[in-house]
Length: 176
Ligand code: HEM
Ligand code: HEM
Image 1 (cartoon, protein in one colour):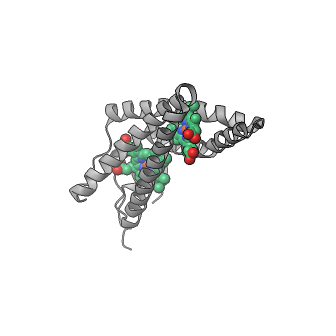
Image 2 (cartoon, rainbow, N blue to C red):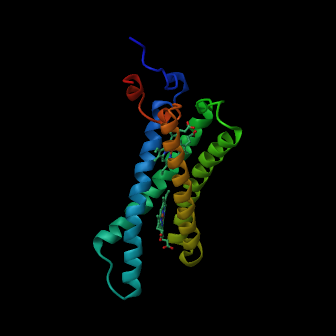
Image 3 (cartoon, rainbow, N blue to C red):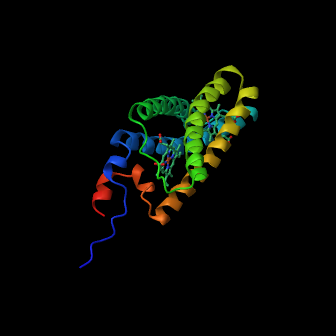
């Protein structure tokens, strides 16, 4: 019987459990941010129309602020962990343009995730008219970066080069 093809990266070339947990926690929190931002929009529309915003929308406003700050703190932690433990080595068989692109995408994601809470606080507490549009523009940049990032992860999965598995639980790897 032939042995199954050993394709996945070795475990030492994996992100740490903390890095993975933080990655997927931030992904989940960003989803909640997109949902809770609807409450901000609706409460502002009610305010403009002279209506009382619903309690749910006001609550979502607070959730958005709290989770936005939490994301900022978790991203700082991620960057510290990243600097301390380094990322797994890049796949040298990939074209250098792809490797540079991945690096730019990752650091741009970190930068946008740090700027979003800063501009969010600015929009809410300092100057909504000026800083609000910057916050919204940053959300569009985040969506674009995530779309590229997700597409790249899918491409790696289809290529079966093991890169996408570096951010998934190791026990899934062992089962393969
Ligand atoms: C990583 C963290 C954050 C993410 C991913 C995020 C995401 C979003 C999204 C998707 C919107 C809707 C944009 C649209 O109108 O299409 C929004 C709006 C808004 N967010 Fe955040 N946000 C974050 C942090 C914060 C924080 C910490 C605050 C602080 C209060 C905040 C305050 C606001 C405000 C005031 C708006 C309305 C802006 C406007 O309509 O001009 N955000 N955010
Ligand atoms: C809000 C959405 C997301 C954000 C903000 C995000 C952010 C990041 C960042 C900053 C890194 C770099 C880690 C480092 O080296 O320090 C990373 C790596 C990674 N992410 Fe995401 N990510 C998101 C969604 C996703 C999704 C949906 C997938 C899978 C479909 C994914 C799969 C991966 C993989 C496989 C890596 C490791 C890449 C490598 O080792 O070169 N991410 N992510």
